[in-house]
Amino acid sequence: MKAFELRYNLFLALIMGMALICGCQTDKKDKEVSVLRVHMESPVINDLTQTISVPRDDPVAVVISKDAVLTESSIIAAKVINSPGGFAIQIQLDENSTWILEEYTASNPGRHFAIYGQWGEKGSDGRWLAAPLIVHRIANGILSFTPDMTREEADRLVLGLNNVAKKNIKGQSK
Image (cartoon, rainbow, N blue to C red):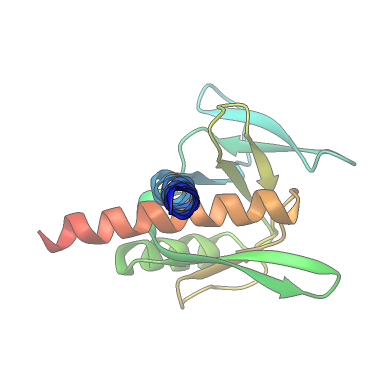
């Protein structure tokens, strides 16, 4: 009888330990946040601009405005999508930012956006991810780009962006 109780207690302790471990991972994923900043290429160099290099493998210098035109606070959803030869990140913007995106893409064809992302627990998990060329007006509020990052990094970035979006939506409904 004592052996049965010992096995039962060990089994119960094992289940409790697993629940704690799984519970901690879930909480950690819910708390992870990401940063995404979209800057506009600038035709002039002055105190309000900076020069960046993107991507990391074969960098190209792009002069951008220091002020972001869109931030993570504008995002209502983000996802990693499959694309030919890899993957892309797609972000859906709120109504006000959809108008901003439309305005910038309609008035700046041939220029680049510069997209900065930061994710993870370390501040070093952030860098310039892409500099997509504006080829047409984007009126639907969906910005897609192929990032200079691994799929795992992209998944973490998107997870954090969606967590920020949930918090923003919750804050707006109060």
